[in-house]
Amino acid sequence: MPKKTDYDVIIVGAGAAGGIIGRELSDAGLSVCVLERGPMIETKDVSMDELRFPIRQNLLWATPRVGGMTWRPHSRTGTEKTFSRITQLLDGWGPGGSMNHWGGASWRFEPSVFKALDVWGQIPGGAIVNWPLSYEDLEPFYTKFEYRMGVSGDASLMKYGPPRSVPYPLPPLEQGYATSHFANACRKLGYEPFPVPAGILSRDFEGRKRTGYCGFCMGYECTVDAKSSTRVTELREAMKNPNFTMLTDRYVYQITMSSSQKADGVVCLDAEGRSHEFTAGIVIVAANTLYNVWLLLMSRNVHAPGGIGNQHGQLGKYFHHHALLTVHGLFDERMNAHIGPSEPLMAITEYTEDRFEHAGLGFVMGGLILGAHTVGASGQPIEFAKAIPLPEGVPGWGPLFKDFIAHSFSRYYQILAILTDPPQLASSIDLDPHAQNGLGFPLPRITFSWSEQLRNMHRFFYPKIVEVFRAGRARTIWGGNDVQPPWELSHPSGGTRMGEDPRQSVTDRYGRIHGIRNVFVAGNSLFPTMSAFNVTETIGALAYWQAEYIKREALKGDLL
Image (cartoon, rainbow, N blue to C red):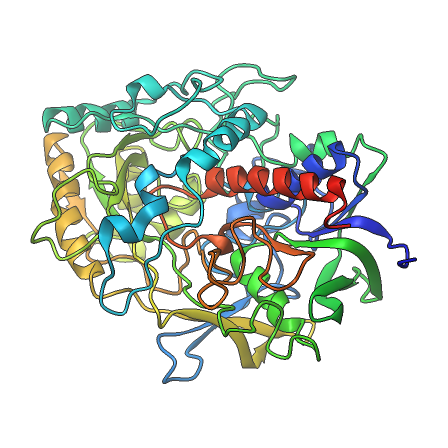
């Protein structure tokens, strides 16, 4: 008889993907243990404290003890930059993961994203491929995400929205003055703006209270649970199941294997540095992109000498993320962009994916334009003063600086474009041979630079944004000379690409690692290509899709 394991399923990470899969599998009767490297977080632990959260990054982001990354522009150089934390507030921490501090943007990917190679072909040095599943495969699971989490939106207002089986469960969030001003400027130019669908409750829903429009969403955990996350939905329900266990302060650093085709469990450290080993019939790696790749590389052994899933040298390849273009406008009237939730934004989608003519533009794919955005996470006063780029002639200190901050804080807003940079053959994640975190483990290293086509994307989108500001009678327009540096990550994806061919991917269409019967990966490290839209809802839909397969195969006895 096979040796009895501690659990049927071990899940590494309690964020968007891990929280969903944990509830789904435990609801189906499987014994599940979720191991989360961060501490237990409850609603009572959070507050509208600007210094504690987005400024000092206390509680919601991984510490230098277990976090961090390094960067280099290409494989011909050594490490050029070392960061004690993953940049741009992306390192999820505690139950809920990055959803604890996300802004709530809840977008579906367009059907064309899933057949990207068919739509766009290949670019020089590119790694564009089709997904091994379609939008139609995920549509029921997009719907499940929206109704489990509570997403506010109105699909009837979305000019180019993808096909849907049902409306959003809640009406869109109310718009503030700044977002309405942005929308009116867009309409003058012939665009059709609409409210961004958001995982923030516009009405009371499933026992949770609606938003109070406090303005502390992005960069904060919600003090009344009006902002959706797996902590307040899936994990809260899963913890009612006697067969569900969640252990926090557990830093998993190895997956153990007894053969080349089977994993036995994981090894982790607790908060005191003690080592623990847990066994399971199924192991699911469901952390952020960098950590997923890091753990599989760290788990190299005699059965997988290059790391688990790396038998064809695919592990860590095809890393990609979003390029952000931000332009600022100053107005005579008060805009008060910092008032209200982070996502009562308006969007124009005329330039996303394949919705516009690309001939002669020098780039493929597209970008999403959003307004009215704030500087920093939620744009509160300290963040604004710390992070606002300064117009020409304004110094970074002294009376002129103070006057600018005092005058502009309530009279500005930002227009943001999220640009799609296709995956490239040369981009990757590996283990840095020299840099370590606070526990002495190697840091994940990103080898990445923006593609050649991004310059052309910037040249196309920048004047579009300036036109909107001019239509809105902005007195001063500044910024947007370039996108962010390549080490400032936005929705990092890839590294464990899913696909049908084991020689070109790490997992199959359900996230199971090729050649290993009981190890799965979840999260956007699976994404073969990116969309112009934010990633969280697709992470969630994909997790529900995977969970459906795993519980079906496990209950048939094919996995356990």
